[in-house]
Structure formats: structure tokens, C-alpha cells
Image (cartoon, rainbow, N blue to C red; front, top):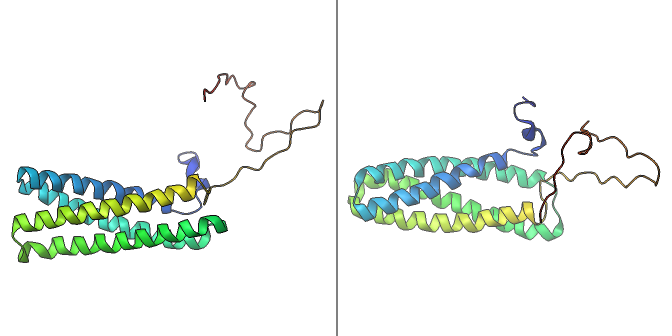
Length: 185
């Protein structure tokens, strides 16, 4: 498995693997529901509801894994507030998403088609906005504070005249491997 998915070995928990599913499904549901309301298309509404169900299931999985991840990752005092805010926003978002999915399921019996579609559209818009803010805080944890990111061990430069220690991963230095290019900043 390490050869097929070598990056997976470095993942501290499965939360980063799951967060993209609710994002994709819920934004897709919002788009389809908006099109369904605008074009008065029942088939697009049904597709939006299926995506809402999948997004709700994904949100539960992502929130659950995030709950456990928060207990296991090292984080600084500075990032602790952001972690708690991310956690609170995403738990509220998950709760609202599950509630919206239950309304979509039960609403077919109790609400007229157009009323349900507009209600779901507004709900999906609110969920999407909340999810965007919460996901931004998750990104802040990773990219600003380095939460759940393995830090490479810093190796001091060798004393003058001595060869550099071998790379831990067994890789050859870039010049020896034929890897020659510059990175533009």
C-alpha cells in the first residue's frame, strides 16, 4: 500500500481524507437546487436532494473524524482558539445539514414542491456559507499554524570541508539525480 499511496503514510488521522466529500456534495446540491428553482426542474431538485443526503453523510463522517483528530493532534496555544472555532462552526454546520436532509426527506409529504425547493435553496446557501467559513478556519490551522503537519527535522549544515549527511529517505541530492531546475518565486 505504501507504494500505491505513499502520502497516506504521513497522514496523522483520516479527517483530511473525508472533508472534501461534504464540501463537494453540498456545493453541488446548492448549484442543482438553484438551477431547479430557476428553471422549475423537478429532476434537478431530486438530484440536489440526493447530493444533500450524500453531503449530510459526508459531513457526519468528517465531523466525527475531526472530533477525534482534535484530541490527537498537537497544536499551539495560539491555534487553540482557531481549532475550537473551526470545531464549533463545523458541528453546527453538520447539525444544520442533517436537519435539512431530514426536512428534504419528510418535506415531500408536507410542503408543496416549489415551497420545499425554495426552503432547501435558502438552507443550502446558509450551510454553504457556514461550511466555507469553517473550512477556512481548518485551512488556517494547517497552513498558518501547521496543525497535524509533520515538520521535517532540521539538519544543521555540516562543518566546512565535511560531506553532508546522507538523506534519511535514501534520496540522492538533486544534482546527483539529474534533477536540475530553478523554482521561480
